[in-house]
Length: 275
Image (cartoon, rainbow, N blue to C red; front, side, top):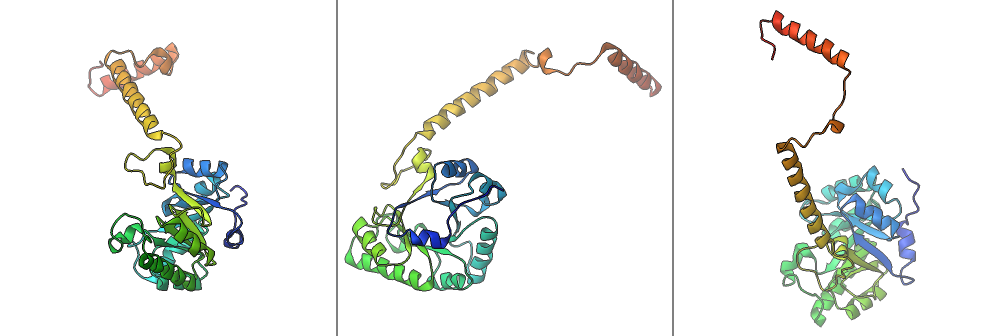
């Protein structure tokens, strides 16, 4: 495994207020390697991506695998999966469960990143996929949830689609790293999905996303080329244009004749007629 220079939780916390961290959601080894080569600080990953191949591709980014809300129920279940993720190459875990569960994980030394603001798994409580914290009452609730996560021992919190001024005020008044996804530059890290940055997302792009490339068009071009190549192959097979002599393994005539003689005699002995 490659020697790494990735930061620890303490290293990241020491950077709070000093510089903005970069964070990406990556889902493939290719994206992980690209994040490594682009010097991205933190990556969010599906737990299934973790393992030796992941760390070979991306030895340096601090990795936060997500423990999907609803896949686990008890604190014991969350802890079991968290330890698996940490042993597989993760550095911390994302968890949108209650402060009670996060506190239990923290008691066992598991670094946890929580979530406030627009939480996709809980949007029914905040009116769907829309900004949160635009009223004083809503902002106060985000602040209350942030402090509850801090008290539970979370080291970081993703704050999603919250007014920048609200997010900045909260970030200034908590010891945790505040990871902004559409919550302005007053937080400690800026977080986007690789699919959005690459323009690979064919659905709605969120307001906070910035598209830097057009991978969707490239994927369309590649699919067109794929279909054309398959079509040409099928046509070659039907017309006997493939395989050509250069695609075949050769055999010396004397060896071939010896084999054919043997096969013919074998067929005759068994009462079959050679073709």
